[in-house]
Length: 462
Image (cartoon, rainbow, N blue to C red):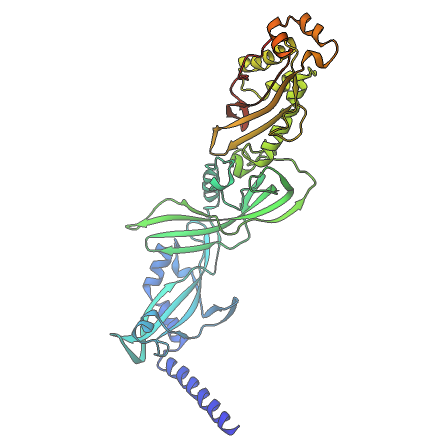
């Protein structure tokens, strides 16, 4: 136990001795504070870099922020510089720094800064660790805070102009839309958030990083194709972080430009109120910023390349084909809506086909050999997001006409309809053929349309 205590005391002594050695020879923080206040280059930087018309009106204080933001009286701290690590990793700390606080009056651009003024001393000279410290440099670090500013309207204008360039893309993985706004269905307003601006001033330029709050409504989807809404939300708030930049050259300051919109931070919607609405709406991601910003929500079609769209399309067209075959009211207009505008000849090919079936007493029956059970037509849609024209619509069906001896009255019906003796004698009037009809497709207003005629592969004998 005594040995352990002796070792502990020895280690404590060595650490304390190292800390005392590290700070030996440093001037008092008060002396450095007075020296830096007399440094003309500090005032020149305030005037040139921060646009402070009267730098002498600034307030200098022996205060500094540490860690979690606590304010303490300025004092020395030491660390090992990269130069020290390169020369000898096992050397003690070779760099010391203290920080003072400078509060400015409003700049010519209307910005009031609270700036950390950093002064550093070093113990390395000509690559050798010295016992004594000497002045190394001073600098203004990123502002503790900056308030006001005449740039606000300009920054807002630059942001809206940049966002307005987002044109939208139905295919989600092709987008370059910031995640913070991609799923908004309407954006009611955008305003500067309460988050403190980050201002950086360099000899060759200035940067301002600002966070904007986005207010509106948005959707959350159940699938990556955005064909099914899981949730529509009101009272949404999201945040968009933007960096503005301007150059400085030969004493002249250039114009502000929007340099970057940070896609990764902060992402997603931070606040929202869920609703029971499951309608698909246009979003910034799918239809662009200008279609959404300060506009009413607009319903949109289910994406044509999604599995849900293709299943729905096929099921609806299957039903329409049966209704058209059965001469149900309204079926013709529904079928026309699936055909390209101006495709009268395509619609006529469907009409002619069914008229021929009527005239030749042929029935449509389920083709269950290669298809699941259905009433007589089965539509399937095959579309790739990248090549709609190479996709196709397949319509499976089977035509059937019974042999006249299979049912009383058929022979008379066939003769009355004008069936030839050849067909009556050779086939007994019967006919049967299964076929998978295929149609070319085009995409019009995000909807798949039929772009080719119905063509049966042979003439139906009669």
